[in-house]
Length: 106
Image (cartoon, rainbow, N blue to C red):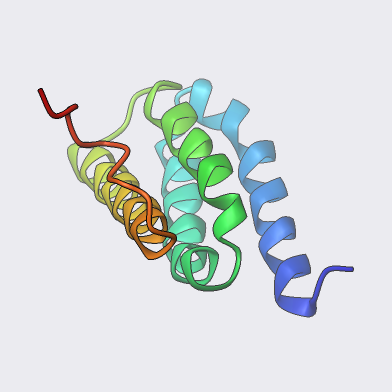
């Protein structure tokens, strides 16, 4: 059963999915709303719901490729993606795994 925080995160992610077609239609204001929502939930996703990191990264990629974005919006999305990558790497290291993003050792 999801906690209240989990339900809120899920509702925000659902809202992001619903706003994606507006971004595809060229709405930079919809993109701004999505970026703002993601920016607010990413710390909680990393700290409490790491199993959602891949889904959030997929949403970021969808926004990045869905329509015209401003340079600031692209930068914000790239920063979020980098933050999520770092969280995944750290989670793997905490579990004793090697860095999945590192090039293989020859």
